[in-house]
Image (cartoon, rainbow, N blue to C red; front, side, top):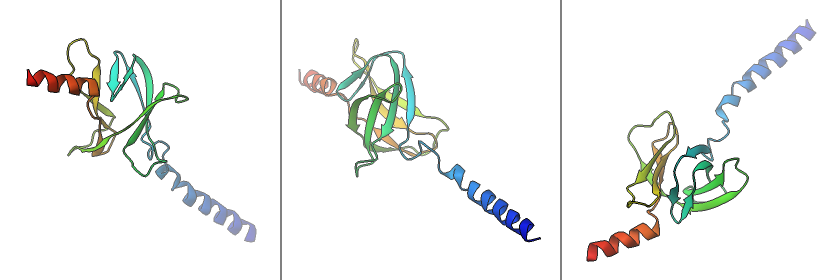
Length: 140
């Protein structure tokens, strides 16, 4: 009887502890997102050629709006940028990216990134060269 009680207690503890494992999802805190782009995209002052990339939040900084962009397998940091907090009223069930309108012949510029299920996202500033061009074009 004692042996059955010990086995039952071990089984119960095992089941209880496994109930908490699904809440510890890898990628949730760093919002790891893998993207594939078919055309060049500019993120702030870095132009990414077509290919696969990994976006992650930099959790080592106190700011949760530092986004790091890695090559497709996540082994080489390409750039890190500070983003502004963005909000949307309805979360989507998958990652969403949107882009600024770019002048003809210029790569698209990343504007917003939302992680699946989140209302809060990240807004990227326009690349400097397009901002300077826009401000000088308006003054002539």
